[in-house]
Image (cartoon, rainbow, N blue to C red; front, side, top):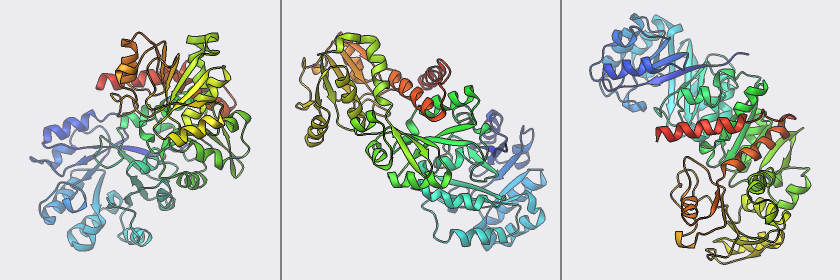
Length: 488
């Protein structure tokens, strides 16, 4: 298995900051030294004592960098980097078209030169012509970085990488798979760092959460499909389970623009399975055949697996939701009053699960028509918004409020929150506002983490035919949340 290399990008306003950042970059195979923006620049000093091979970059402001001096001075800096033994220097393709100084750098030692092009707005319409022109410069490597708004826009990068001389990157959240799956894209290496470029991920995250160094061209691909995929904890769990089981597979975030975007991308990349979250669970059901009885009854799918040229669907949310609830409430669920907040794909699974336990369910949602349709299809009733205090025995939050970036937002004002049980499907570091209010009111509480783990364990088994190791997923996600809590 041949994995792409990982290059950590480091910056600094002073030489001391740059060298410190360079020496703290311990997860990658290479380091990119961004010399633009360093006030007291010493090119030889930046390279002296480096632990790993270096790519030296001095990016001008006209291509997204911080160097605002003359092109003659910039060319001198890069020539000095070659003379000081830098393994690679990055030369912008546009610079080679306008300055003989940069072409002299290429001709001096072409193997050590990377000719690069960056488009921070879009995928350029002349992408193929630009790549041909870049290769015509004669450097040993080219780098093409473009901003993508759709997963499918990265597929053209795979064609560029297939030649074997390129570093290819889709910038932005939709382009994250091109970084994590660099070996699948044929990229010589990819870049990691703390947001130096759009969509860039810290090297430790790529190594620890996404097991970057285990991913080769034949590694099987799974992922989570959402418009908010970057906040999902599912990759941490599934990648830990793949590693523990010895399965050559990786699970990545797939920030799709729409569901057709995912379907086209999955076909191009050979994706074998996917977790489906907001807002695509109904689309996933429509895209699949056959569908099992439970999923058909719910009317929404949260899991797909490839079957020939098509997809099979299931819904692991039902069992995942019930596992922690049964442990707390047990047989007392029958004839209990359940209030469900929200009427989306998750709410459909929750209503179906509660009805299977004999709960009398009322659906409360801001969009009353959507609530009525859900209630009619799943043998429930609708209620006013917000849900009145004291109208439930089990309250379940299926809205995004309380989730990533919204931890202090609640679907209900605190005076309406009471017991006996409040179940919030959101999760994150610390309890949500809803659960804090519920606990203060004396209610039992469950957050979305046990459900997340339980449904993910069932997804893994459905995809692979084997159960994940006991506690592997739970331990992985709790370690991640603990690390997030410590940093915040």
